[in-house]
Image (cartoon, rainbow, N blue to C red; front, side, top):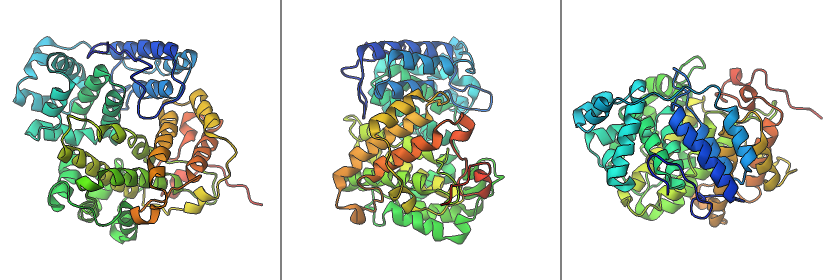
Length: 442
């Protein structure tokens, strides 16, 4: 049985939102390496806050039908640069039960082992549902701070939490909560909370589609030009510093009522895939933006989050609204690039999904970003094809064979590339495309 301290995957019950070809032997190997990662490694692999992606990578490989050898190889490849786990302090762990001490410990990298032990103990004592409700969704001061941090770090905390929820692993959920606790809080007070207040709260009926809001953001000269290539954190030091009011004015219009929840999930998923895939340079060979792919990779978990029986509807709507608003912010933060739909619709299909999945599993330089993207696309195809024929009404851009075309674009773009050349970074800037091969001209 999986516990707060033990990773144990069942190929019968822990199959995730989208999976194929899972075997008993793969479940055993994945469980073993994830257990070792839990016990031996920190959540950051360096002192700059770069994330340990091993749990994301291994769980995705497992879901995509990777063999035990492929899972073990991916794990071994990504262990050499991880930071070692640090022991928790019993005194600090005990102090975290006090709300003031908990608050004061938030945001500090050094407190990860203490938060991990704390959340493991809390889950053991009270269960996952009670812990998530208390420490993430209760709306008290500490929970609100944790909610803000959940959407920080390029969406890594909510990705990590999503994996734990999706595969029914309390230990991964404990890791995710501890990771959330040590992230920065600025996404809340600087953006998400002001947008929510400007919207009049949670759950208002959405009028404009997300696609319309994306186009409005692109058409706002101050907003679209708010970022410089040299900005460090382009969301905070670019968009929100130079055009924060304009960004909030756009984001507040992305609202989701209870009756819209399923359709708005499809919309959020579709639009993130659209701007991630269509943000190309027609003179260059296709590449996908490293930052944009996180909006797609984090979308898959909402298929499970929106079904959680213990989560009340306002919380589900809030999570969906915050995710949509973060996607809009992310689009603007890479210089609001031109989007070329024909780059998708005209892309040749030379491989089927089975081939694409196998190649992504076996890519020798992937740290998990590639396989996560491929699986998220398959989930997107499954979700959005339910709305075939309603694309214009719902503001959807990716239809029919376009999902497979994007899969071909992705796998072609990373073929034979090392990690540094697999992606472009900040696609709306000319500098991002320097060194990318020119497109062949006929």
